[in-house]
Length: 316
Image (cartoon, rainbow, N blue to C red; front, side, top):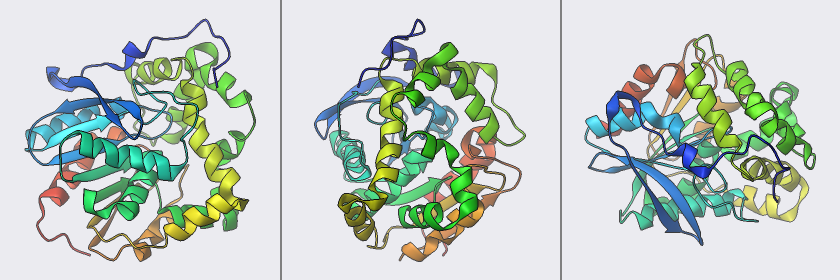
C-alpha cells in the first residue's frame, strides 16, 4: 500500500498546525478500534466531534474549532484513518469500520456521546455512525453529503450526479490516482479544492497545507480507499448488506447543510435525505457557496451550527 516514491514526501508533523486567532489547540493521539488517531482539541463543554472529507484533514475545521470553543463546547477535530496524523493501516476503509473509528474516539475521549459534524466523506461516516451507534450520537450535522442510501441511488440512477462524481470513478484505477494526487507537490489537491469551491476561493496558505498533507507517505492511497470500497461494493454482498443496514432510520436531531453551487454533490442528490430521519430534521441551503461551506463562509456556517446545537427543540 506504499505510495510511489516522491521527492515531495512530507513528515506527518506537517498536520500539527495552529488555528486562527492564536488559540492554542491541543494536539494528541488517542487509541480506538485497533488504531491510533490524531485529534486537535479546543474548549470545554459538551463534545462536538468534527469529521473532515476529501482531500483534506482535521485543519478544514480550524474556524469551527475556535467558534465552538468560544460558544462553550469541547470541539475536537480528528484525522480519519489513513489521513493526517492518524495510523495508515493496510485495511479497514469500509464505512462501517470507519464509523466504528469515530464512535471509538468518542469513547476514548471519555464522553458518553457527541454531536457529530461531518463534511463530504466525514458526513457519510457521520450518517453511518448515527445509524449504527445511536446511543453515542447526541446530534448529527452533515454538510455536502446525502444520506448513504441517497448517495448510492444518485450514483446509480442520476447521470448528472454520476458525471459530477467523475473523480470517484477515476479512483477505481490502481496506482494512477495515488501518483496524480502526489505529483508536483500535491498540485491536483489544490486544483480540486479550487474547482469544487464557489466564488469564495481558499487562500494559498490553506491550499499549501492540504497539498503537503496529501504528500505524507501512503496518505494518497489511504484517502482513496474508502471511495474504492463505495464503488466496488455496489455489486458485492458486503455492499448490499451495508445498504440494508442503512435502512434503519436516524433517530437523533439532524442538521443538513449544503452549498447551492456544490459541483460534486448535487443539491437534488442531497435534498431527499430527510426521509431517512425519524427525528427533527433541518435542511439549510447556503446560497452562492460550493462544496466547502464551512471554509467558504465560516461565519455563516458556524452561526447556523451553533444556533442549532443550542436549540433545545430543533424544528423538523
